[in-house]
Length: 156
Image 1 (cartoon, rainbow, N blue to C red):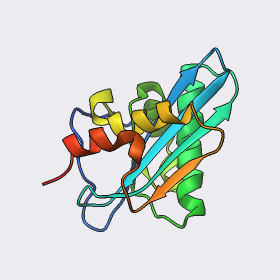
Image 2 (image 1 turned 120 degrees about the horizontal axis):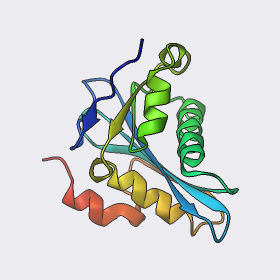
Image 3 (image 1 turned 135 degrees about the horizontal axis):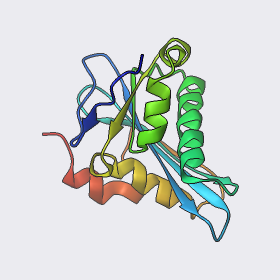
Image 4 (image 1 turned 180 degrees about the vertical axis):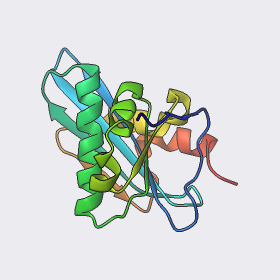
């Protein structure tokens, strides 16, 4: 039995007491690298943590998005963050996760597909990661690489 993939055009906050992680990957075939961008929000839409990380390797877009999602789940786990929901604009990856009955049991999160327009912060962090030598983590503050997007999209 396949779980339906719900498309969200606009960001939606997780329910009270829960956390949501948006994730994206960006490819640079000329440098054989991918950039991973992640942004963790609370139920009020506030940014709690973000990550930009460069990974060296020549990957297909689907594998890059899958690596980004896996890295995101590990990153959250390593920081002791309990995720309830993860959003990605990689439809095939989300469909694969949702069609695997064990995915929620193993990871404890629900994967949702969102349009790129609802994932711009993660996309900006992924593009920024392509210019890095090391990972950049911002905790409880807004990361400079995506400030303009956050200001335009801040919750009221």
